[in-house]
Image 1 (cartoon, rainbow, N blue to C red):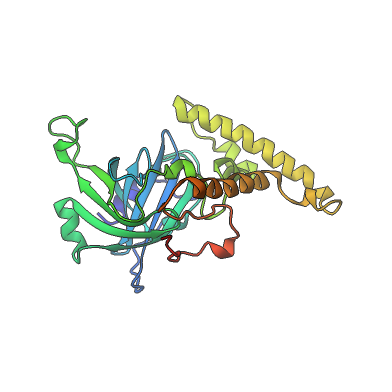
Image 2 (cartoon, rainbow, N blue to C red; image 1 turned 90 degrees about the vertical axis):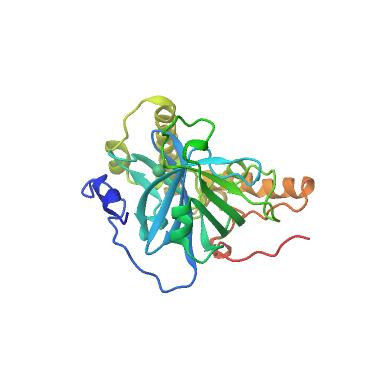
Length: 289
Ligand code: MN
């Protein structure tokens, strides 16, 4: 469907999202990403690069590493390739809210003909991201999904982890909740923006996500104030030169892998979301035996 629908839904004079044009990549590695999107509802946008655009599914509960847990994935319009690196605030309009780059890396189809697999509604693939790895399948449910009505939405698919060494009962969305781009949470992403952007373009309130967003905006404003107040004292002590929030976030995430190592075997190796940027390149980590 190329990018017509993507463009139709957006006013690029008002949104910082990339306008995009279909681009063909000569690189053998195909890009994939998952963007955690706090909009009217919190969801995870799962995107696979194919033919110069990002095939996209909105996964309300996010991916699960447990093969028994099938996650509803609504097929949505293709997005431009450069959207896959986007992290930031979407002002009013379609998808208004905050976008976090939650995972990214490369993917490989497990069958040669991706278009045929999509048409068939059964796309098997291997991911090599920071958080998501190994073999997965996206399968179209049609009317077969338990919650579906007759003549149901043809956009309904399921995202399922195949059983392999990267599967497990680890709750990946809770275990690794932060950005792989900035290491931040939603409020950190907001705090990086100038108030003019995120205050004046505040998405409409309402619903659970609206209340959540209002809280996040408040916390982001407080965080930003604290950071601004810290700046003049920057050279007084070494302690004060460290932004408080990111230190806390680092401590929080540093603790999780250790805790987990003590209790789990053969777990997928998770990225340290707060690790130094230089270590966060997509690469195949050594597997635990
Ligand atoms: Mn979305």
